[in-house]
Image: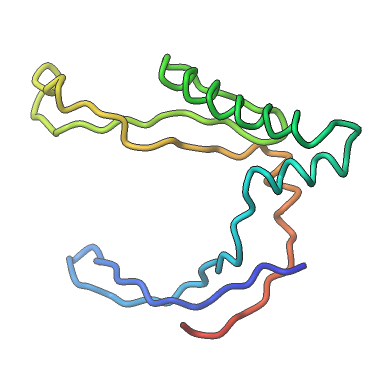
Amino acid sequence: MAIKYAIRKKKFKDAEGETQELYFATAHRMDIIKTDEIAKLIQEATSLNEADIYGALKALSQVLARQLKSGKSVKLDGVGTFSLSLTSKPSSTAANVPHKSVKVNKVCFKADRKLSEEVKNVEVQKLGTL
């Protein structure tokens, strides 16, 4: 099993403000595996039934959202930690950051060290330039 990649051009500004074009390898996503497929794979690897696993995964999504909304980070052992990042309008002083401008920017995910180590040595295969 190999991860496919392509070489893409990206533009960067250097310290002097000049634009440079550099080339980088980027992962090419082949497919997206969905919840029902994950449930089938877990069912094949355990004695649990597919419907119960599917229900647990859907409940996990709901619990994860509820806990993140309450200001908590959520750590799933062997998977990683989910948290929220915030953004706001900038201000010259801390006291003047407008409360109404503070919003959730995105859901962040930091992979568990064990998961990161497990996928680190995957084979890679070049697709060609796109």
